[in-house]
Image (tube, rainbow, N blue to C red; front, side):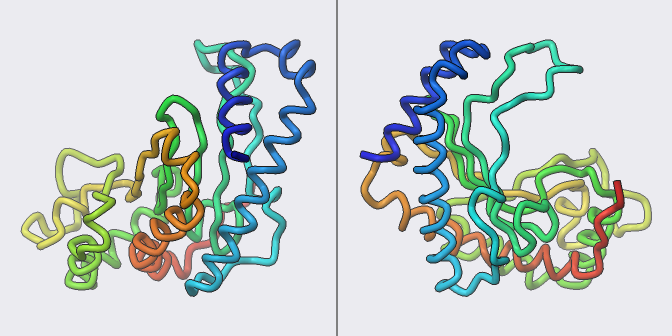
Length: 226
């Protein structure tokens, strides 16, 4: 089973998280990367058929490196033992929002979507403003059976509705949010199942209206220059 090679490699890397192991097992790493990228390619084909507009990029351009930035971390492990990717309308960029995939053995895997971090203040304000004027649409999305079967809205939030917004608004609880995202956690057994690709595509289909709502709110967002 191809996905098992990914899990086996990541299990080993987690147990031996050091450059010596990484370099000694470069062939296994490269094989696992190829399997992950092939999975992403097949998933992108399915997403396109389901109606997602994706950029013509290679799966490799959507993945994140294993290396960790340990400069400000108490955990000095050099590698993050997981394979991660973001598939969005502009590829790996976090906005417009898309689908986030993390494969991490031991139950750490998940498929997600939405705006994961409140790093862009303009994006947060755009979504709050859009929520205020599209309350019914939001409510319909987050209460639909296809959505609630898998997801609940998550995100960092304030204790109170921010100044300038109506505390009595129907979506007051969501106006407190600074980010809005979804996660569906996966067992290793689900990843190894024969239907994992189609199951992942189904999860993406279930979260698509949620992502589309956020992206409509973020239509005029401009990524800050570094």
